[in-house]
Amino acid sequence: MPTERKAKGQERLIAEADQSHAGQRLDRFLSLCLPSLSRTRVQALIKQGHASLGGAKIEDVTYRVKQGDRFALELPPAAPTALTAEEIPLDVVYEDDALIVIDKPAGLVVHPGAGNPRGTLVNALIAHCGKSLSGIGGVARPGIVHRLDKDTSGLMVIAKTDQAHRALAEQFADHGRTGALERGYLALVWGAPPRPQGIVDAPIGRHPSSRTKMAVLPGKGREAVTHWRVLETFGHGEGREGPLASLVECTLETGRTHQVRVHLAHIGHPLIGDPLYGRGFRSKLRKLPEPIGEKLSRLDRQALHAAHLAFIHPVTGRLLEFNRELPPDLAEIVHAFKEL
Image (cartoon, rainbow, N blue to C red; front, top):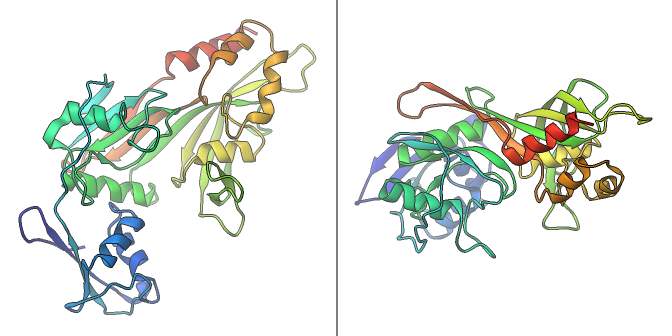
């Protein structure tokens, strides 16, 4: 999408619809053209009068785009942030003027929100990066282009400039289908799948009766694809019908909320320690021998770690690839399983 600078800190982005866009809602069309902005943010900009069609203001987010329509979307300058800098230690894996890659610990919330106004990754990044952080999206906030659940550990990349934010957001929006983006997870799950590897292709949407959960919703959810491979199984013998647990590698073809957790539970092998999708397996803890039973009872998060991340650097064009082993809490559990 062509971009032109206007007043200080403001941009105008131009988008022209072709035949493939005809019939799409305006908010969907512009959000596809601007992967760095959420659809909710695009809707707000349209309703606030920042969009125009052929020079005339348009505020109808449901307008059906026609071939040849030429839109302009004004991006207001970033607003001052009320967020405070906090000296929270960060495990920095890589950093330059455009971006920073960290290994997020379990328990650290990414964005401030209800119940977590402080002590988040955002607060830590403000302290670490200062004014270099990306303010794209109309709000001066760190350039988070993807997120991990509070209790998932592992690799994240954060943009430090608007240019880097847009380029990284485009890669994550593409989910690696046509580019070099790769995201890999290590998961400790109950039991073991019947095959050494496979694919879960099952749409995910909001759970119909619980707003805190996601669920597989055939015909209703958004496309979600997870590739999995069993790396190791644990707890054979002693009259057991099959392995007690497995270490599974997952790679994502899409990026839905709770995707790995939902998909592994969907195939009958929820994450160990998952409070939302693995509750039915808590009774297993009472039957486990020591010391593994004690170690698992102390685990206060789902056993999921973002171990692999690869993407194209938004400035240099180089392929960057990062790998991180399991953190001590999960490595200790794997060791205990191996001792069974």
